[in-house]
Image (cartoon, rainbow, N blue to C red; front, side):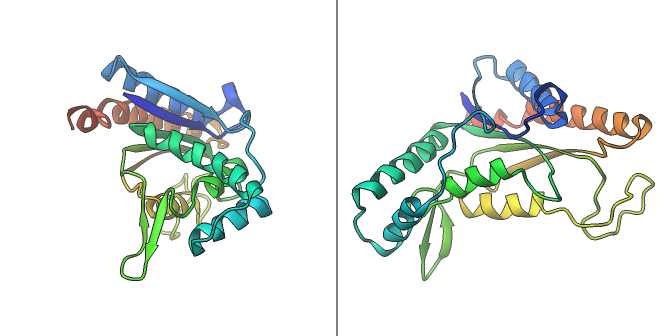
Length: 222
């Protein structure tokens, strides 16, 4: 069994989201001893600029026109990235919330892989539909504050009532590509004083461990 793990924080050992992912993966390995994890560190990976050749290649795919040599070269990089995704049995993403949304490195990666004919299709009858198999996806998220999307959380810890856009954005864009079996673990309030931050982190660690024990059970037997 092989997973792709997208690591989206540059803070490494200081990253709360990476520490959650480590707990999740350790728990997964105890459950699936032969588990293989292909880590993609988005801060070390050279992501190509989505320039005119990539854009023109995309629109020629949509319009059914042949690629130029430059466009074909650019498109081959995108194909290689999506082929790597399709070989995996599941996905893991660790990320911090930046300015109520996702880090730009992850947005860059998504902009490269979210492509017609590779990860999504379209027809007049069906509209947009995903081309990735709906494989289990664990998303380990951290945020400095506690956010209530609709402002309804009146707990002491929820000092911010502004919406966050991480979960709705990922649900939409990953769902468009076919990934709807999403499981979020959120360590919120990591910038709060320790008496608030530490219990929240410990609870998130427990949730990450529990998810690692159960998420791959159906995958192994199917």
